[in-house]
Length: 130
View 1: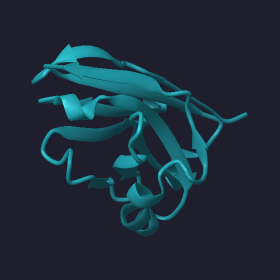
View 2: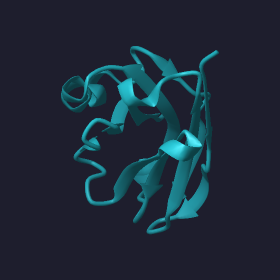
View 3: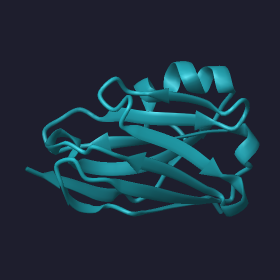
C-alpha cells in the first residue's frame, strides 16, 4: 500500500525557516520522481521542487530558487524540503507528490504537472506572516 505522510509545516515570520518531511512507503525509490507542490487559496497549483535519485537530479520553481532545497534520505524513505528566507507569498498548503518516471522526465516535467499524476500526501500548511 502506497502512503505519503507529510509533516513540518507551521507558522513563521518573514525570513524564517521550516523543513518539511515526507515519509514515502510502498514504492521503489530508485524509479520515482519525488517533489513538492503548493496550493494557496485563489491561486493556481505550483510545482516547487523535484528530485530524482538517478543522478540526484533536481529542479526548482523560479520563485523558490536559492531559498528552498529538496533532498532525500533513502535510509529513512523520506523526502525533505528545506525552506529558508520564507516570504508571505510562500503561504500555502504544501503537498508531497511522487510519480514513477525517468530522471529526464522528472526534471523536464514535474514542476508543470505536479499533483496531476502519481501519489500525494495529505498536505501540510505553511503560513508566513510579516
